Length: 164
Image (cartoon, rainbow, N blue to C red; front, side):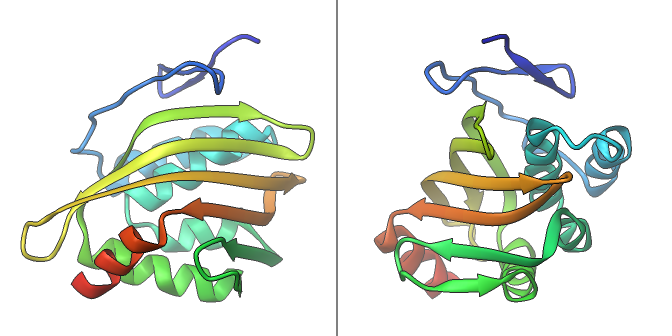
Protein backbone atom coordinates (compact mmCIF):
# COMPACT_ATOMS: atom_id res chain seq x y z
CA UNK A 1 0.00 0.00 0.00
CA UNK A 2 1.37 3.40 -0.94
CA UNK A 3 1.92 6.02 1.74
CA UNK A 4 -0.55 8.90 1.89
CA UNK A 5 0.70 12.46 2.25
CA UNK A 6 -0.65 15.08 4.64
CA UNK A 7 0.82 18.56 4.39
CA UNK A 8 3.76 17.09 2.49
CA UNK A 9 4.56 14.69 5.35
CA UNK A 10 4.05 10.98 4.79
CA UNK A 11 1.39 9.07 6.65
CA UNK A 12 2.43 5.47 6.40
CA UNK A 13 0.51 2.21 6.55
CA UNK A 14 -0.50 0.93 9.98
CA UNK A 15 2.45 -1.47 10.23
CA UNK A 16 5.02 1.33 9.99
CA UNK A 17 5.54 4.30 12.31
CA UNK A 18 5.72 7.98 11.39
CA UNK A 19 6.49 10.64 13.98
CA UNK A 20 5.74 14.32 13.92
CA UNK A 21 6.83 16.97 16.39
CA UNK A 22 4.99 19.93 14.91
CA UNK A 23 3.86 21.36 18.23
CA UNK A 24 3.58 24.89 16.85
CA UNK A 25 0.64 24.17 14.53
CA UNK A 26 -1.85 27.01 14.55
CA UNK A 27 -5.53 27.31 13.86
CA UNK A 28 -4.67 29.07 10.62
CA UNK A 29 -2.58 26.11 9.50
CA UNK A 30 -5.45 23.74 10.31
CA UNK A 31 -7.81 25.93 8.30
CA UNK A 32 -5.49 25.73 5.29
CA UNK A 33 -5.49 21.93 5.49
CA UNK A 34 -9.30 21.89 5.70
CA UNK A 35 -9.68 24.19 2.68
CA UNK A 36 -7.25 22.12 0.62
CA UNK A 37 -8.91 18.81 1.41
CA UNK A 38 -12.54 19.87 1.99
CA UNK A 39 -13.74 18.69 -1.42
CA UNK A 40 -12.26 15.25 -0.88
CA UNK A 41 -14.34 12.42 0.51
CA UNK A 42 -11.31 10.14 0.76
CA UNK A 43 -11.26 8.68 4.30
CA UNK A 44 -7.57 9.52 4.74
CA UNK A 45 -8.27 13.16 3.88
CA UNK A 46 -11.17 13.12 6.35
CA UNK A 47 -8.79 11.77 9.01
CA UNK A 48 -6.23 14.47 8.25
CA UNK A 49 -8.89 17.19 8.56
CA UNK A 50 -10.23 15.74 11.81
CA UNK A 51 -6.92 15.52 13.64
CA UNK A 52 -5.66 18.85 12.27
CA UNK A 53 -8.85 20.52 13.48
CA UNK A 54 -8.47 19.01 16.95
CA UNK A 55 -4.80 20.03 17.14
CA UNK A 56 -5.77 23.55 16.12
CA UNK A 57 -8.63 23.75 18.63
CA UNK A 58 -11.13 24.26 15.80
CA UNK A 59 -14.15 22.42 17.19
CA UNK A 60 -16.45 24.05 14.61
CA UNK A 61 -14.46 22.24 11.91
CA UNK A 62 -14.74 18.98 13.87
CA UNK A 63 -18.52 19.45 13.98
CA UNK A 64 -18.57 19.79 10.19
CA UNK A 65 -16.54 16.59 9.77
CA UNK A 66 -19.04 14.57 11.84
CA UNK A 67 -22.28 13.50 10.19
CA UNK A 68 -25.26 14.98 12.08
CA UNK A 69 -26.19 11.57 13.50
CA UNK A 70 -22.62 10.41 14.17
CA UNK A 71 -22.02 8.10 17.11
CA UNK A 72 -18.80 8.34 19.14
CA UNK A 73 -18.03 5.35 21.38
CA UNK A 74 -15.36 5.19 24.10
CA UNK A 75 -13.98 1.84 25.27
CA UNK A 76 -13.05 3.13 28.74
CA UNK A 77 -16.69 3.90 29.57
CA UNK A 78 -18.56 1.71 27.11
CA UNK A 79 -20.78 4.75 26.50
CA UNK A 80 -21.62 6.56 23.30
CA UNK A 81 -21.86 10.27 22.61
CA UNK A 82 -23.60 12.28 19.96
CA UNK A 83 -21.51 14.44 17.68
CA UNK A 84 -22.59 17.55 19.62
CA UNK A 85 -21.62 16.01 22.96
CA UNK A 86 -18.22 15.01 21.62
CA UNK A 87 -17.61 18.46 20.13
CA UNK A 88 -18.39 20.03 23.53
CA UNK A 89 -15.92 17.71 25.23
CA UNK A 90 -13.24 18.41 22.62
CA UNK A 91 -13.83 22.14 23.15
CA UNK A 92 -13.00 21.78 26.84
CA UNK A 93 -9.99 19.58 26.18
CA UNK A 94 -8.51 21.86 23.50
CA UNK A 95 -8.97 24.94 25.69
CA UNK A 96 -7.31 23.40 28.76
CA UNK A 97 -4.45 21.42 27.18
CA UNK A 98 -1.55 23.29 25.59
CA UNK A 99 0.52 22.17 22.64
CA UNK A 100 -1.88 19.35 21.84
CA UNK A 101 -0.46 17.21 19.04
CA UNK A 102 -0.70 13.74 17.56
CA UNK A 103 2.58 11.87 17.24
CA UNK A 104 3.67 8.40 16.20
CA UNK A 105 0.73 8.38 13.81
CA UNK A 106 -0.12 5.19 11.95
CA UNK A 107 -3.10 5.58 9.65
CA UNK A 108 -4.66 3.27 7.09
CA UNK A 109 -7.77 3.19 4.95
CA UNK A 110 -10.29 0.46 5.79
CA UNK A 111 -13.30 -0.86 3.88
CA UNK A 112 -15.55 1.49 5.85
CA UNK A 113 -13.27 4.44 6.57
CA UNK A 114 -9.94 4.55 8.38
CA UNK A 115 -8.04 3.39 11.43
CA UNK A 116 -5.48 5.55 13.21
CA UNK A 117 -3.14 4.68 16.03
CA UNK A 118 -1.31 7.57 17.69
CA UNK A 119 0.08 9.11 20.82
CA UNK A 120 -1.62 12.33 21.89
CA UNK A 121 0.81 14.60 23.70
CA UNK A 122 0.19 17.95 25.34
CA UNK A 123 0.74 19.96 28.51
CA UNK A 124 -1.86 20.30 31.22
CA UNK A 125 -3.05 23.64 32.62
CA UNK A 126 -0.12 23.73 35.06
CA UNK A 127 2.44 22.50 32.54
CA UNK A 128 2.25 18.82 33.47
CA UNK A 129 2.95 16.41 30.60
CA UNK A 130 0.05 14.54 29.03
CA UNK A 131 0.42 11.38 26.98
CA UNK A 132 -2.33 9.06 25.78
CA UNK A 133 -1.90 6.16 23.38
CA UNK A 134 -5.01 5.60 21.31
CA UNK A 135 -6.51 3.71 18.43
CA UNK A 136 -9.41 5.27 16.54
CA UNK A 137 -11.66 3.39 14.10
CA UNK A 138 -13.90 5.53 11.92
CA UNK A 139 -16.67 4.85 9.46
CA UNK A 140 -16.79 7.53 6.76
CA UNK A 141 -19.73 8.10 4.40
CA UNK A 142 -19.68 10.85 1.77
CA UNK A 143 -16.68 12.49 3.43
CA UNK A 144 -18.19 12.65 6.95
CA UNK A 145 -17.60 10.51 10.00
CA UNK A 146 -20.68 8.49 10.90
CA UNK A 147 -19.10 6.44 13.69
CA UNK A 148 -15.91 6.83 15.71
CA UNK A 149 -14.75 4.11 18.10
CA UNK A 150 -11.99 5.27 20.44
CA UNK A 151 -9.76 2.80 22.29
CA UNK A 152 -7.71 4.49 25.00
CA UNK A 153 -6.38 3.77 28.48
CA UNK A 154 -9.05 4.69 31.04
CA UNK A 155 -6.46 5.48 33.73
CA UNK A 156 -4.78 8.01 31.43
CA UNK A 157 -8.16 9.59 30.70
CA UNK A 158 -8.89 9.84 34.45
CA UNK A 159 -5.58 11.69 34.99
CA UNK A 160 -6.46 14.18 32.24
CA UNK A 161 -10.02 14.70 33.50
CA UNK A 162 -8.54 15.53 36.92
CA UNK A 163 -6.45 18.27 35.26
CA UNK A 164 -9.43 19.85 33.54
